[in-house]
Image (cartoon, rainbow, N blue to C red):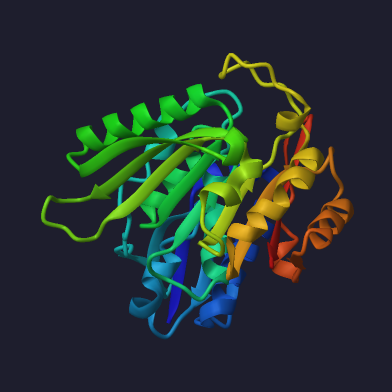
Length: 334
C-alpha cells in the first residue's frame, strides 16, 4: 500500500533549494532504523508537494512517521486519490509552544525538531529519554523535546535568560492546566569554582498521573556540564552553536569570544559534554560553516574522543540561512 505525506510549506521557507535533499535524508534515517518502506519519491498533486512511500503496516509505524519535521498531513494514496489518516499524535504538550517564543537569534523550531528527530532515530531507546541542550538559550530545543515526552535539561550562561525561560514555562503550564511542581536550587563547585542555580519542573498532565517529566534549566557556564550532571546520564545532546553574528542584545550582557566562537566553545566544552553522554547516546550539533569547515569540526570532535557518523544521509543537511550563515549539522558518538 502506498501512502503520502503532505509536506509542510514552511519547510520550503526554511530550507529553500535544499528542501528536497533534507526531506529524503530525514525520512531515510528513520527508515534505516525500522525498514518499513522500499520505495519513496516526491510528487506534486494539485499544486501541493507530497512524499510518496510504500508501507505494509502503517499502524505499526505511524507514531514514528508522524514525528517527521516536514510532515503536515498523512494520507493513504490509491488510484490517484488521497484518504486522510489520523496522525499518531503522542505530543506530551502542545508543540506550538516553540512558535510562541519570538526573539532575535532564535533557532528555527522546524530545524530544532529535525535535529532532535535525528537523535531519536539513531538511538535504540524509546522511553524515558534524557535530552540535554548545553547551550539552550531560551529553550526552543527543550520545548521540542518535552513535546516528544523527553526529560529535558538545558544549560545557559545568561542568568536573566534562564529566569525568563522559567517564567515563560510556568505561565504556559498554568494556562494549559498542567499539574507541576517547581523549585529553585542554588549550588556551587569545589572551592567556589562556580555558582549555579537550577530551575526544576516536575510536570504531569493530571494530578493522578504517574508519568512525570523533568524540565530543568540551569544558569551556568557549559564547561561545567559534568560537574552538575551525572556521568553517562544523557541519551541525546543537541545544540545550536554560535553563528558568529552579533544579535540584538537579549541578555544585556556583552557577547564575548566564548559566546560567539564555535571553535572556542567546542575546545572548552566537548570533554564535559562527552562525560555526561552515555555510550549509546548521540551528539547532534549545528553550526555556521562560514566560521568552521566540516573537516576541522570533525578533527576537533575526534581529538576529544568522539566518533563522527558520516553516512550519506547525515551529510546532506547543509542550507543557507542568510548572507552570513550557512548552517549544517554534525552527528557523533563516544
